[in-house]
Length: 210
Image (cartoon, rainbow, N blue to C red):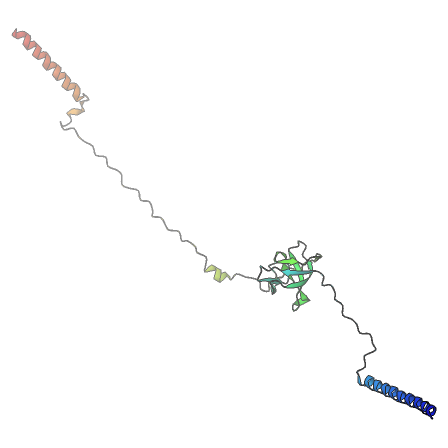
């Protein structure tokens, strides 16, 4: 009797285990069907690409101008702020200007003055020929009528005509003795002669009295 029971228990245990195993398999298949299926295609992985040559605006600059060409005579198309990092494409033949990526403008690139920025270490820039020099839209012309208003011509002043003065009249003086002085004998000689004669007469008179 005991042997019969033991033989009966083993099939029962086996059947129970089989039922649990079957139930587990069904439960696993249900959970697998409820989960979203992953695509079988290969998903590309995003890998970092090197930035390449770039520049950094110097910190001591609040902002710098970005122009359409390598020169101050090219129009300004925008600005960059201090510390801003921008990819660089090349430089001018003299190395004074750098071509950078600048979306939003024609061609997507613009030029900036090299002394105002620093190159990112390892950056190598190729020489790029600059664009043609811009021509002014309006040629400056001078209005001759307007320019004539600012031309000051000095009117020469007419000098007075020279009038010859009347001839100078030189006065002549007549001698007081009525022309006696016109004999040609100096008055001094006459005086000396008279003194000499008077002296001789005095000497003769003195000798006669003795």
